[in-house]
Image (cartoon, rainbow, N blue to C red; front, side):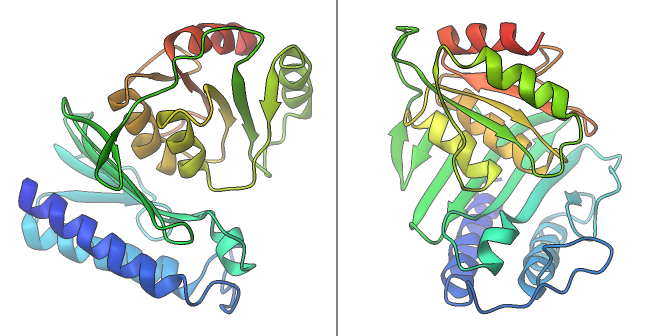
Length: 252
């Protein structure tokens, strides 16, 4: 699989360098949904071509044209542009994201932020990396000093849940940062933040982002405490071990 992983990474880097020049100068062509561009579609189709060229039995599960959960041994879960709204409006920190699963176990993931030229990768049992250098989750365990991200998606309808979690996080340094979901997870993986609670509209960036956190030595699970994410999961918690335990108690 090393050959196809390298091809995927090369393609992600090449596409990122192309689309960064279009940021803020591209149309939203979404009809059934907002925040869709020609680049979302192009990247998703190109990824499928790479995957199918490698093995026709591999299936793509992705946000735009392949959002019916496939039944296959090898599944690639992609968010062609995580944070498309940022890309459309010329703001930084969107990402190209894909992960490879074999029998529901993630083997490889990549998330690339072309606006910052930051490439996050992870390989099962081999760790996580930022621009080729190993990364680890933070070792901050003092509850008075931990920094956590609270990330409710813009389409989250349960306002009561958002309020409940917001109030529970008052005692900690909690941040709502403006970047793609995938990058929020990567920022936890490299220790910029200690943990995250995410309320999401889908699971596409979580498969890759959660895996990168785990390979960086952290924990990432759904609200049921499961490592293997289901396609209908919408609440996620991640971080270093101590912060994860704190945040897990917040969402119960």
